Length: 464
Image (cartoon, rainbow, N blue to C red; front, side, top):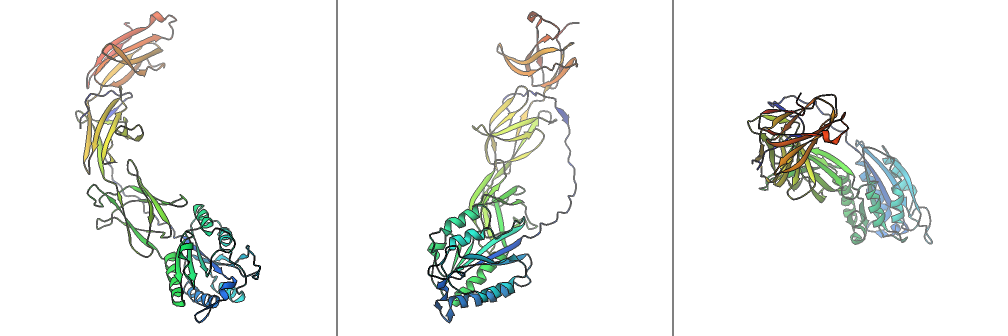
């Protein structure tokens, strides 16, 4: 695409041939895997004494829970802990603050947790909200940890607390990930869906299965493929940064430069499946997709529309111009999306743009269309050069002269140098100047001159 008029440049250009270099980057070491810290919040309230198939709920739950813990032995990057509630004060009357971290998070805690569960028995009331609130203090600071809560309960909140609100606030602060809840003996899904991911265990078999699924989802990696779709719905776009944000807390979780594998398909990533994500893809302008849920244990495919084309600039005569900024905006919008150097090629989302070349005078080209996988080229004339010979220090300005009117372009420099070289588009100009040593306004001089493409003109302000 060619501009409808020629262009003026407001600072020196360097005309040169472009070249590219090739090199091989250093090998990048993979980031260490995070430590998964699982805090089990276990119901030891009086209702857990109730009969449940072959034994009491508490005995069955602790027995099956202990067998699951054995499967976690020798697992790397894992710390576990145990918080009980309802185990210290008898009901009635019960105590709505009856909860305690009995086994702090750490490695090799399995036998210690088993002993604690054998020592305590069900006694009191069910303060779920308060227990979750206190659990927020059970995770010591850690830069590379996943904090997970698994709540095992046979009842609902009994202390007028709001487990949903507490869970949401702690997730929002990034204290822990979305909790798991296993409901024993009765379906509490409607009450616990707002707290976290709920699993129903109406019998022993379902409880064992729920524990296995929860542990698997909490610890096993999940693969994700992000398809950056072109205008035809094909995953051909790549080589752009993608940032994954936690939808609840807003915290930044991952940054990936999108890439294709050796089969030409989007590369596979491993991300935490326990979060809901907002993804920002830093095309120009950026695109985003919010509230993305991941299915744990499966390969997930996320499609994001990101059709792109290219924008390039060209100077007549195929000369390369460097160090000339060009402002890129959406057509009809004031926000600057990018400042693109004249000699570079950039990718933009498919659409119509406005281009402002920061030359003297500035050039605005509207309705620059970026098409899928196509390079749109904006061409400008080769500039001319004006050498302003001042002979003395002073105060002055350069103007574009059109139809009897002056448009300010540039203030001359009050420096010891007696001349200034300015690159300008072809056109008519005027310089207005007064020596700093002249104290009369009437000593002002003005000179008109013309600039032609690729030519140099000398402008003498004084005839010596």
